[in-house]
Amino acid sequence: MALRAVLAVAAAALLQGSQALDVARVVARAEAGFTVNDKVYVDGSLFAESAALNDNVGCHEHKGTSSFKVCGCGVKVVAHLMTECQTYKKYDTQIGTCDCTSSACDEKTLSSGYSSTFNWQAASFEISPC
Image (cartoon, rainbow, N blue to C red):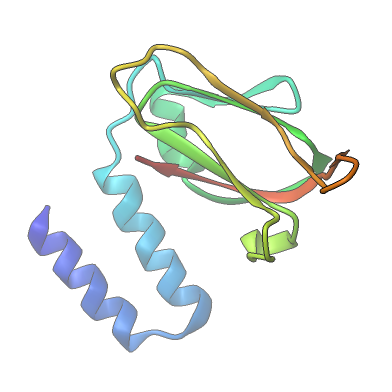
């Protein structure tokens, strides 16, 4: 695995933009070891679970939702306000604790605001192994 990671870093250094991201995704998929407990729910529906998560590592576009739930300690999701998993100030939220001492699912409704809170909707989300 270490040699594969070194080769991926070298290849990524030679590539630009989305090609470098594709190499990083391939390495992440190869090294991910999801269990039957790992599940990702988006907008109340099961999006991917267990070994199927290997095919879903990376960025996904969505029509917009505020509801995410992650079960298991081997997977996490980062919800983004922007498309293409671009970061924007405080509107990037991690769901999933990566804590194998707990069997509880991490469920979040995306919200923000100081004096009065409001729900914001993610336009994209990224699945990655812990």
